[in-house]
Image (cartoon, rainbow, N blue to C red; front, side, top):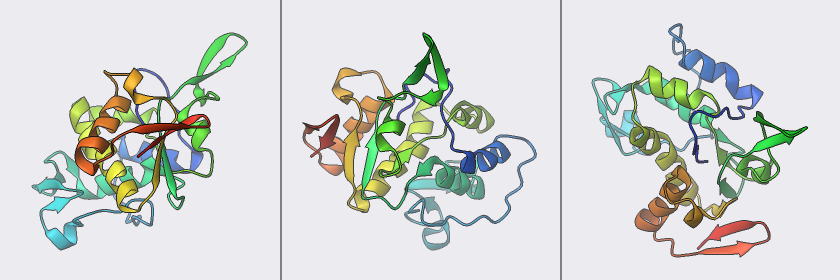
Length: 201
């Protein structure tokens, strides 16, 4: 789930590329695509009026920066395998092909590979930096607006939280931030190695 090096390219499944490309170009016009089951929007704008995913809506924009419809589409496109009973977080690692890193293809220990088709994962792909630039978001805002709601969704749905890499070994990463957030906000205490993943308890 974490994007530790924003300069690297990341995998975006084909079904999400169109939505993300629309959102990061000046041609984007909301087309009424529904939220679906991919994102559990807490404090939906129509209900709470001025809060969405615990973020204030200011002048029709989430955090005063992202139009509500854009935000919902980005959130929907960022979550994969949403109906699974677990969520996999971790580092994105590239495939090595003939000694060369291919960042467009997740490596065997990448969190995306470990999630496979059986575990929810969060990924904005290479659109992460485009979204950040388009809406003038800091790294902390990107984490707050997109990583945090994905974590909250997973916990509220009772999903098992897995890490492809031990977040304690990467202190200055989004991966570490995710683990800290889960501990501080949702009461997780420890990580237990099970097979090739760490389970949050």
